[in-house]
Image 1: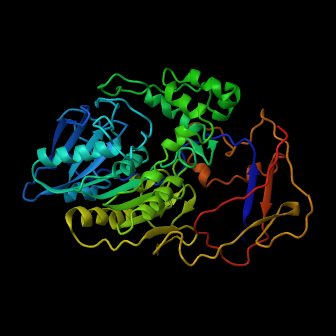
Image 2 (image 1 turned 120 degrees about the horizontal axis):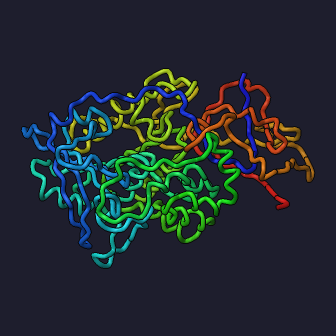
Image 3 (image 1 turned 120 degrees about the vertical axis):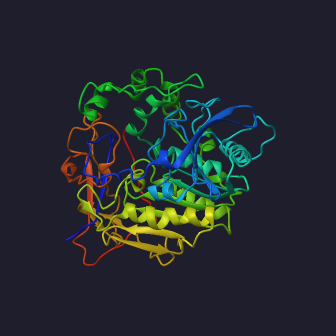
Length: 492
């Protein structure tokens, strides 16, 4: 017996989460050092800034290889030509197949020169060599690699997850002709309207608070610290911490010198010019490579970004290969886990392994090496509940039937519009001293499990409104965007 529920909460604190049941991460299966030689370069950009870049070249020189690039603000460590990563590509299959793997510290981060700017705004018309952004940095990087790293086949690809996903999306605009394939994964696209900072305009506290400890101003170049300072919550319960910290303006006092980016987040609390300049969607044109955008249905940080990226590229770049993949994963889970279950929710197959072997690996093999045909549809989407992969020629699917759910008197929810209810309304009283939690246990750090947690523990609270259908008589498949339309007033 299943029902649909709609909940209206006030003052949802964004925090959690104790580690929850997740399947085991994929174990390293490949000896990178035995098969690759590592080089380190400081690649010059057009404005004179040098970006630190690690390059892993296959020792087998019997054939040329394409470049596969990962640009990151999180450090390309380990540093030193004798210090190797244990994994290079999106999966061990890439390491075994042979690519020239390139890792780059973006501007102003760690061993790269320059100034770091959060989601650096794209410059559509560049009038001088000082007009730089991520697209110009990738262009200059590829141009240098082609001329200075031997035994390449003339093709380049780029990929990245989360912030590196943004760098992937931002880098492929007006790209170098050698760029043939890109995979932005969980990319940030519009920080205010859906990704990381403000979800639909509502500030997502925990996704930002601790995060900016890692973005302290730094003298470049510099190595990352051997250990990052751990934030001292002074409690095991983030609900308690935020409740007693006072207004949000107090929180920068805890950030130990990393408050500049935090201040930007908090001070720009409307969709102003700061956020609009960082919305990448309007600029995603002049893209000529194949694009595979990836996201997870249970991604607490960047669920909106993949859809925005996919649709923006589709609208502005007709004729290129542009596909979307959505699976039953948390943030970045498709790259790390088997994907057989999430918490207590089972998916009946190793969805992560399926994606790595049957989707992302064939994609890059086809477009960077000319090997085979990945036979990828426009949209490759995992349908939870039935636990099957669906292939569509468009997203949302073309044969959708649009439905509207209506609130009903007495907490009802129905596909039928209510009769004449006059000026009736439902109301609740919110107490800022007792905000509504969304998990029923003490927890810290960024939320993940709340995307699938049973939240019925809160439905008896007087400051929570719940609307519920009768028992469903048939299966319902929900596909495409869900858009609430609420009529709301407040006394405070």
